[in-house]
Picture 1 (cartoon, rainbow, N blue to C red):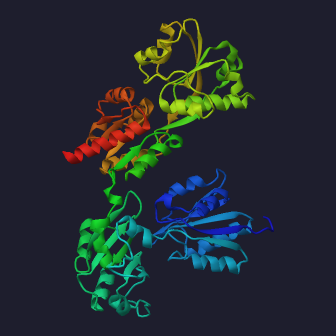
Picture 2: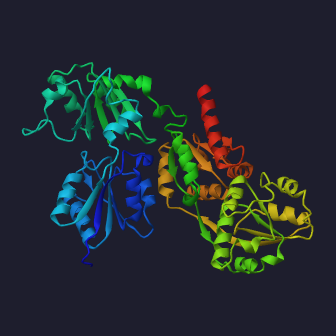
Picture 3: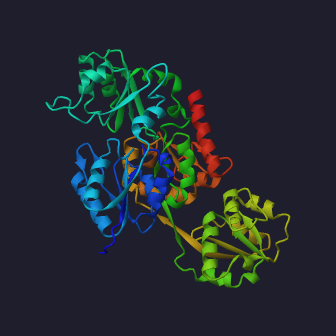
Length: 512
């Protein structure tokens, strides 16, 4: 233990959409030694933490407390006393019903330095994403934030129901779903008109957002019928009537679609971000994990004799990554490749190669033999030596096509794809509960590993109402070997093509 006291950052993690995190908050998370986060803080924010950071979950929901507030306070003090930088992530804003003030007081009492990083509160953000401005010149010029968690029937209640009822302010109740009936009863009993518009917004600003509207007279029944539960905010006031006109978030083309992402987690971010931006709820269940080759001796040997080769061919971004990782680890740089010509399968692989300052000479459109032959047709590769760094288990189409054209092909293992079963139970539960709309497959290995996760269960029954989205014909062919027919196939065979395919698929469904 060190005598130097660390720093605690009380950070507003925002309402749920990770894009609403402030720049300063992101910087604090990136530099923290310890990240302590709540139930309502988006888990995506943890990706900003450095690898060696300690991640501690202290979530509290509906009476289920991982740690009591007192223990959370002492945890922050203890970590800071060890000289560590602590990022305390709190949903919304730490000083808006976030108990951040209590934590700050205890830190001050123990001589621990702290800073407060404000966040976007759900009291404003959730209504905004539901198309409800909390203030509007034609309706009201002020707003009240009220806890919905306090029991309105207790004798020493500080709730001024007569003031709330007579006020023309927009009333925003936080954490009040369980007390909705009491909130409505007290407002009406104190003179609030029964036809006053009301909205409840659950999981506001996220792709799981659910909005239920009504009036004080009808909202309780409407919420019960919708089976809406916490976390949700309650908005009372005439501004709620603007939702019909101003709703925007839940009109996104893929809003609410629950789409499973089977790609390796390290590569899934692009697909996840594109689908999320269109309103989809992405469920990451990576079926593969990309790891370095168990034995990289052959790859190192090939790099050691690069002057023997005429061509360097990459079939994936992983091949590019692991080749260059090994090249650099051997003390070499791109100058060692100056005499080579390059070929890449797919535009994304070409872009990844370009990150190293190298332009691919040719770009076969697909992995099919005829496409490879066509791409190489303008080059005389007879007798030329080709180095092909690739996965341990890879299709033979490419080396066979090049060999038939007279090239001498050396295949070396640059990386391996192995089964990832971390999300197996979650996947099976979601499928059995009919909680999945679509599954995306970005390679044959994602298909094979996905099916292995289902074990002895009848995949055709589990996937009966699930749309299978394939990135291209080879992946589609693999899907068919399991007796499943893709609902859509990307064109072009890229991540953007897959996203466009999903958009077109659901647009056609709506028109039908």
